[in-house]
Structure formats: structure tokens, C-alpha cells
Length: 317
Image 1 (cartoon, rainbow, N blue to C red):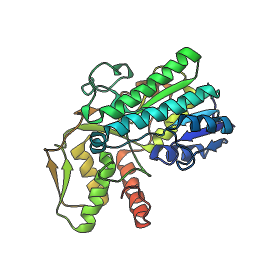
Image 2: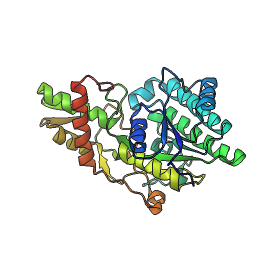
Image 3: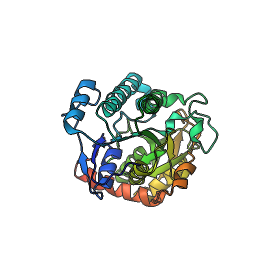
């Protein structure tokens, strides 16, 4: 098993929500944290990434860098989501192999699973059915990353693993309504509606889809746990077990944000997958489980959003 103490650890994508959470978590570990700002290293540039690895010699890599977004962004930019994510995965994973990285933790996504997979979704459901069309480009890229880790393990003996988190939220999320996921989009809409004195808040879809949500700091803790306690080829799910409908989620967010108006559901907009909850039995059997209750995490995230927005420091909002 790899150990994090004393290691040179590269967090690829350190400025994203997940990357920042991993850096926060590693702040409590006696290690050297390596980062590469985008203006200094283009992670889609294979030669540049290889040169960076040769110079900096990381021993552990958390591959959290990715082009991400919600339904609208996936539908609008299919080439970007497929191309950019494939380039990042190929560049970083190949460089990790070439330069003898001790362990790489690849961040997958629960959207890799079939649209109508049996619930809760077990890891073995991967590639067992058609994907959800609204995020298929991102999902295919992430599946390729998982398989690339497995291929390097089989052909070269690399200790590369893949973790599939459920839907995430928390500080440093993207609040741009055109590209964000559902939870940060609802936070922004609820705060805006409250501040403008609106009577109604409109939500995409019917409100009936069920989703599982996990605070990003819980994910960061799980990834560090897996770095030290999991060495299997098979991907592993990272979930919270906290499942709500989109309508229930909106109600919680409005309550925590102080918006007392009505909710209106726009059924002309897509719902996405009807239900998506992952089975985290493998992870909990190893001794880890999420600690942040959904309402607590949402309240904290709203507070963070309002503080950062007042400073003009919120991504997309």
C-alpha cells in the first residue's frame, strides 16, 4: 500500500472544486504538495506534461483535472467534453507511467454507469447498458480514463486506481447557470430570487429524479483513504447514501437560503437519469464513510457562496 506521509504529491486540477478540497485535506499530512497552474502547464499537452513530470518527480498523483459541467454544457459542447478530457487523461496517465509514479488515483464519475442501471449502482454495472444521453460525452471520456488505468496496470504493473464519486457540492463549485450542476445552480437561483424579492423560482424538469449528493470535503478524505488502503484494478464507488429528489433538494436549498416563494417546474426541460444512487458497500467495508449531513453541507455551501460573491470571487456567479 502507498502512504502519503513524506511523499511528493501532485494534485492535477488543484484549482477546481475537488482539487482544492484534496489540497485542503493534504494540508493535514506531512507531505510535499505539488501543483501546476493552468497558465504554467496545459494538461492537454502531452509533451509539456511529460516535461513537468521529469522536472518535478511526483510520487503520488491525484488526477482530478477535467472539463466538467451540467446538462446544458454537455449538450452544447460535446467535442470539448470528449476531446479535452481524453487529452488530459492520456497525458497525465502516460507521464505517471513513464516517470515511475508510485500510485495514481483517477477521479471518475457516477455518470459512467448505464442510464437505467439497477439501484443502488454497483461497480459491476459499468458498460452493462446504454448511457444517459445528456452527459454521454463526458461519461465516455471518464470510462476511457478508467480503462486506461486498468490497461497500464495489466501491461506495466502500474498501481493506478479509479474512484467514482457521486454528485458533489461544496466550496469552490461552479455557479454559472449555463455550465453548472444542479445543486450549485439551485443555490444561485435561490439566493438571487430571495435578494430580488421574486415570488417564484423555476427549476428545470419535473423535480422527480432522485440524486445522491456528497460534500466535496468528504470526497477528498475518501480519496486520501483510498490512496493508502485500496490497490485493486476494479473501480470503486464513493458515495454518501444521502438521496433526495430534485424537488426535495430545491426545498432544502430554499429553506437554507431564506427564499420563501413558490417552486415552479419546467417540464419542457430534460430530467436526465431518473435515479442515480451508487452502492458504496466496497468502500464502507474498508472502513470509510461520509460524515457531512446534506442540510449541514448545503447551509455551509450557501454561506461560503454568499461570502465569496460579496468579494467578487465566485466562479460563474
